[in-house]
Amino acid sequence: MSPTESPERPESYDVLVIGSGAAGLGLALRLAPHARVAVLSKGALQEGGTYYAQGGVSAVLDESDSVDAHVADTLDAGAGLCDEEIVRFTVERGPAAIRRLVDIGVPFTRVTRSDGSQAFHLTREGGHGHRRVIHAADASGRAIESTLLEHVRAQPSVTLLADHMSVDLITGRKLGLDHDRCVGAYVLDRKRGRVEAIAARFVILATGGASRVYLYTSNPDVSTGDGVAMAWRAGCRIVNLEFIQFHPTCLFHPKAKSFLISEAVRGEGGRLLLPDGTRFMERFDPRGELAPRDIVARAIDHEMKRLGIDSVLLDISHKPAEFIRAHFPNIHARCLELGYDLTRGPVPVVPAAHYTCGGVATDRHGRTDIEGLYAVGEVAFTGLHGANRMASNSLLECLVFSETASADIRARLPDAPPPPRLPAWDESRVSDSDEMVVVSHNWQELRRFMWDYVGIVRTTKRLERALRRAELLRHEISEYYGNFRVTHDLLELRNLALVAELIIRSAMSRTESRGLHYTLDYPQPDTTHPPRNTVLTPPPAGTPGDPGIAGGTP
Image (cartoon, rainbow, N blue to C red; front, side, top):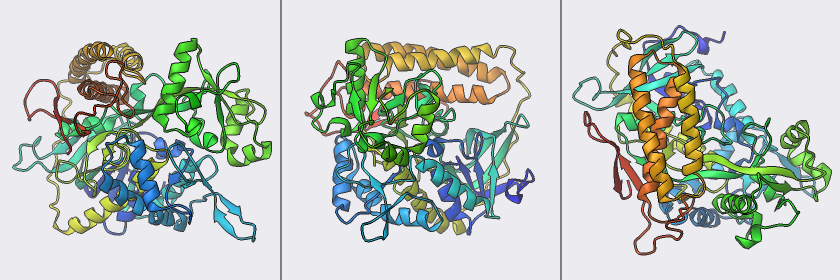
């Protein structure tokens, strides 16, 4: 066993990182020379959204491209809700973020120029006006995750804790202290079946998104909104949670759980077709298959409902077979396993919940509303994505803000107070559950009504129905949580139920269609007021009641 993964651990750390994707590992690697760091993963260390990302990272890397062009494309995709200063801040730091990955050995795909020199291959995805997505074939996330993990494992100051799921954050307010600083977290050691307190001077949420709240999703099983739920319970504002991105092209097959057909397939010429072979995207947007994801997903949803079909088709077989196998080796191989040959004909695809554009309110350093608590990556709301995330800006956000957060923490470490001794987890009044069917049933009900009522196309009536069910479920789960020992499944359900309610309340407060939020009751953007963010504010400590909602920009 590696020394960094030993169960013998210090009582506290300088930094506790909750999440082991690109954001969490990138931050740990930058902090390793300066601090004692613990990285938690609720499953295997590589299991997360980063590992399954196919497309790549968007950055200005070609002479024909520019920062201004990348900024303009991002603002256009964001439908008026991006923070332009944050967009420029992020885009300007993109090339340096890529250089850091290249320096540690991420094997990005290269091509040979006509003069014999080598260059990185850049692809183009929806919403981009240029080729600016650097990638490692069609498994970019796996290459980035594996390389980062290899380097983090080599750091003696970093402790890696797989199969450890955070239960809740611990703050000074919860401990009755005279400050509200985050001082650690209660964590379920899944292998030992016990909850322990881990103290830290700084805590970072890098827990990813919440797309498992939907019945159909491209995300791995771990994407259950844990960071958003924990931050809300600790007292942080949550912003723009109504903007859930549905990826237009998940493979439609009973054995293809969560298998994504990368947007790069459309970027390289893939066409969307109806069952009779006709193209349809140009009827919805002049950019056709390269329109932003919200437009493509709604178009597919519209055609499926209009024709009563289960899926549409994605076809790139007009490209040379060798080109397809070279650019999309993993997608090609997986499709072959399921009986489809990309080189010979189309594959059936459907939209699926893919990315959570809103999240925990942060500044450009990753700081949240609570001192000592940071949020980085998909769990955070930085202002980069607005009402719709542009393809491959997500890994860019992870890389840039893990760097800015690590720099801020390094500067503040010398003056950060040591955490207090934390009280042990109290299980004196709970018992083992003999009714786990309650958890599984609630899980299925939650994901079904979210898909039916809070999906790609919404109405006020559907949202009201969803809210009634969400409130009832959350009260049931809260009672169950208070009486029985916690389990991994119960914790995920508890978090998903809360996040579902926050998504619904955010959607109900937006009386317009904008970006990823489309409602039949208000099908046009509201042009009578400046575009606004939806800000959900937790009730004061000890106050019963529903989440508070206030309009405005954090």
